[in-house]
Amino acid sequence: MGNIKSIAVYCASSNKVRASFVDAAERLGELIAADGRRLVYGDGGIGLMAAVARGALKAGGEVVGVIPQFMVDQGWNNADSTQTIVTQTMHERKATICNISDAMVALPGGIGTFEELLECLTWKQLGLHHNPVVILNTDGYYDKLLACIDLMVDEQMMRPIHKEMFVVVNTPEEVLPAIMNAPEWDPNTRRLAAI
Image (cartoon, rainbow, N blue to C red; front, side):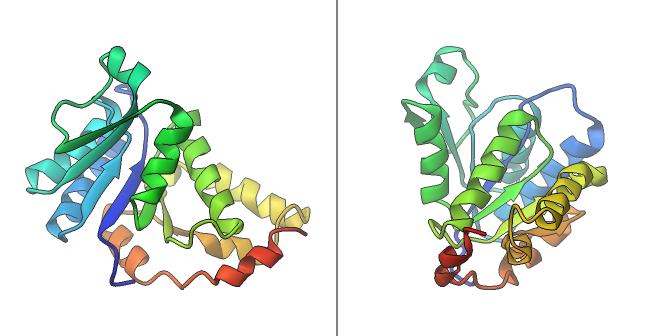
C-alpha cells in the first residue's frame, strides 16, 4: 500500500458536535499532511470538514475540496482549501472524491457521511475500487452501525468476508497505519457480491 498519495475523509459539517470529534478531525488532518499525503474532502467550511482541513493546512499539507456548485452558491465551501473542484451534482462529487483518492476514512458525521461511507463500501463490494477504507470510531460513534453490519451478516444480507472491506480504529494515530497495513482487496471478490 505504498502508493497511497491521496486520502479522502468523509465527516460532519455540523458546528454543534462534541469537542472530541473536532479534536480528532483536526489531528487526523495534521497527521495526513505530516506524512506527505494529500487530503481530499467535501470542501465544507464548517464542522469536522473545516477541522480536518485546518489540521492539514497547519501542517503544510495539500487540501483538495470537492463540492457541487449549488453548495458554492450557498457559501458552504472552504475558501482555505489548496484546490477546489466544483462539480454539477452530488453524484459527481462522490465519484470525483473516490476517483482521485487512494484510501477513504470516515469520521463521525450525519446522514450524508453515512451515505458516502456505505456507497464507498458498496462500490468496493462490487469491485469498482479496491482502496482501503477506515472507520475512525471516535468515542464509539459508529458502534451501532457496526452492530447493524454484524446483523446483516447474521441475516445473510452480506457475506462475512465483506466485513474485511474496512478497518475500524479508535484514534487518529491509528488511521495511517491501518491504511498502510490494509489487506489487498481481491478484484475477483466481485463474484461474492451476491449471496
